[in-house]
Image (cartoon, rainbow, N blue to C red; front, top):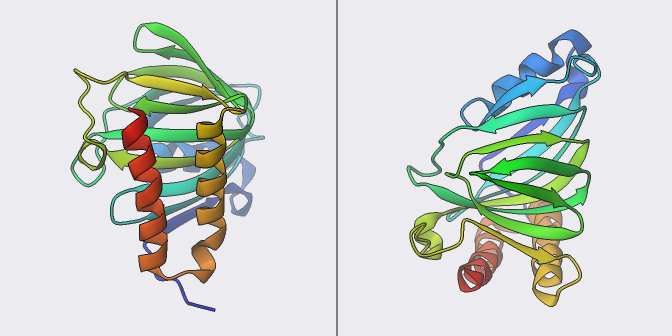
Length: 194
């Protein structure tokens, strides 16, 4: 068994007193999202997050409960703007992406330009995500769609979903070079989709 040494962040709100969980969640998301709690679930909020920094991207698994309304904030990864691959396993997020209505749930996978403003409400969620800088994809917002979705039953969605899930599962037992090579393959697929 290989000891994996990759920069990573974990958060489990179960370790917090219920009255401080939403504050911890808001702080964790500061700079990415402005979190506005639903007053009915402010003390019931739970979240568990694991995020790993690889050479070209971030990848992680997120689960949280309690309805929240969020507004995206301009953020950078490795000093670059980025695109997000998100694969939902449970729950739904819905709202506006730029000027248009959108939904993300387990019926589809979504690739979106994070620099486009998002206002959304979320049901309890469980999803995998990969954050990829524009340069790793050759992404240009003036030439590429800012929001791309595929049915979860489509071949490309199944390939991305199974690959990302497997990489996340292998993080504890694989070397950083193996994980980076595997993640690079997903980045290449996403770049070809654009």
